[in-house]
Image (cartoon, helix red, strand yellow):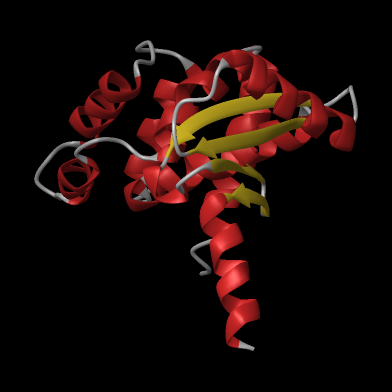
Length: 180
């Protein structure tokens, strides 16, 4: 079975369960960090795939790792995934759930990367421009990053779209023009 299909199916099932239990927003907030990756993920993955560790212990570790409450719908769901020998897909399921939630709630993730930390007013200007492009009804989740290799300026990533207003990009464009 396709590695992309399994996480999507489980994510849809979790989304439906969370709607029924009224904890969709809470599960989204818990799974967001997991979808981006966890520190020590390789060690966790080895433990999750270890057949000698009982499923309940694996579930308890995962719940503590993401900060969910025992007995919650997420707790039961994670235990189900582990019992079905799908633990290796937990991160992809989290990613698929987060994507599904964002799609259903009209949320766009925006990553603003600059060479140095930008002041809040500059971030607000960039967010305002992005909001105009996507519409006022779109909620933006803004993540700020710094990357000194940009030299100056910034990049804005919205989904698969990258807007590059960095000095590094300008220098690369100039180099290409000079070489042609």
